[in-house]
Length: 86
Image (cartoon, rainbow, N blue to C red; front, top):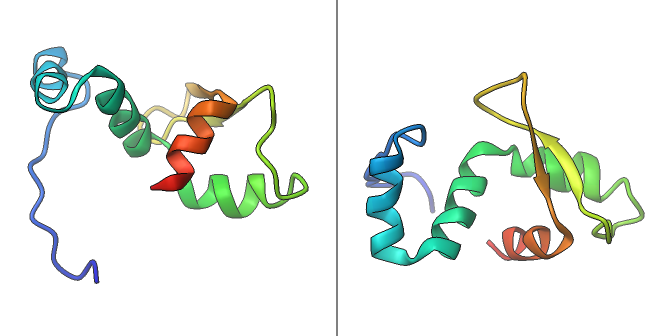
């Protein structure tokens, strides 16, 4: 259940705080965690991927940034596979 979660919050815009996470879990894992937090995963899976013949686009996909609506985030096919495991 996700009824109670004790989270340590980091400011994703603060490179120093992101570096703390990188030191703890590694750069590749921190990049995935960051992506996980700035995209709408439910929308990506339900409204985008499932409407694209149920597959991951081999060339990746651009999705809206959750915190900055003027930006998009590119997700490669490999990144999509890793994010969908979570």
